Amino acid sequence: MGRASPRPGWNMFGGDPQHSGRNSTAGPEAPVLQWSFPATNPSAPAVANNGTVYLPAVSASDFTTGVLYAIDSSGNQIWKSNLPFVPAKTSPSIGPDGTIYVRGLYTGPIVHAMFTESVSALSPSGNILWTFSATVFDLANSGLAQHSPLVAPDGTVYVSFENFVFYALNKDGSVRWSRNLSGAPFTAATIGVDGTIYINNFSNLIALNPAGNVTWSVPLSSSGGLGWPSIGADGVVYLDTANGLYAFNPSNGAVQWQVALPGSVTSATPSIGADGTIYQIAGTSLVALTSAGSILWSVNQNVGNASSATQGAAVIGADGIIYTRTNNKVFALNSTGTQKWALNVPNSFSGDGSIVLANSAVYVNSNDLCVSCFSGVTKYK
Image 1 (tube, rainbow, N blue to C red):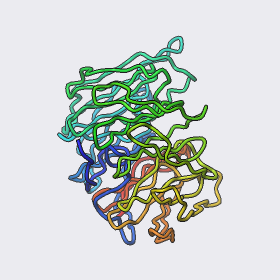
Image 2 (cartoon, rainbow, N blue to C red):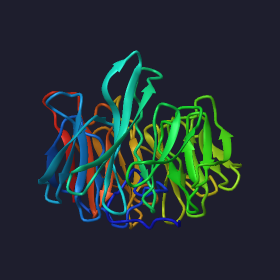
Image 3 (cartoon, rainbow, N blue to C red):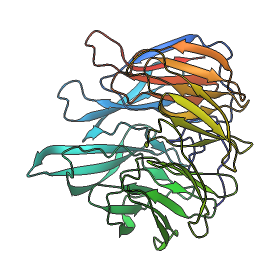
């Protein structure tokens, strides 16, 4: 299957199926606001290689369904498609053929703690091609399925719901296979260079072969964390947990090393530079580590706000500059950890703010609880 090369767009969470966090373009030297696009309670965006931005949001008319906007590189709406669900607070995924996949939190009312979760496939022109749904039990009355669909290079779509089942879907939405992982797999899967699928289901890191068979399973701490696994160029699997950052041998799941990080937020995803340096968010800090687990530097990005914990995952440009996001700032850091620039951005008080680097521009979504504040996506270049 092979490792996906960094692309000019941002086609899925983490930028690629390995969740490296890298982009093939460099970000802005001195960012200037290009445009702002308003949307109600928006999720994170995805950006196609041609610059089209796909932004899921809640429908302003009823707040029980959603919409997907297609926005051109100048900030103009191309189309808007109604979604049969409230979208999850994570980015859509764009398949190799341009199909857009959007994850839904729930459809319809919760009845006796039961509700429906879904994923929809849309054509590049905005037509819904299919929707796959499953009735699930709301484990904590939360609907916290905050993970993006994962699209493999062959077009297979991987998604997990709160019914404890991990699905592999064909391009037409039919089920290729499914596996019960006995521990709600809330987080996104990651695909290794050999096609192995890795998923963290709170209590275990599980490796599946492309046919869906478990090749190994490694127990994590009692609170394993919500982090997405990411894959290094050598196939090593990195995962942030309640006990710190781990590196796992891809062939058997053996722990190669483990590093405790102060203030670790066990939902952060490691990003991996072209030289193998690992960038891990830990509370209000960004930590850089060697591929052997030695800490190179740590930068505290506390901006004097109780909600200033760094959000999302670090993003890495083609020139090695690292980008991070707090609730109302974006930071650009040199590879040595020194600050290149800081940018004030619209607030994301709810903590689901993200940053995307695509086609040499930075995109941030904003979702503020303030009625008079901006909610939507902004582009800087």
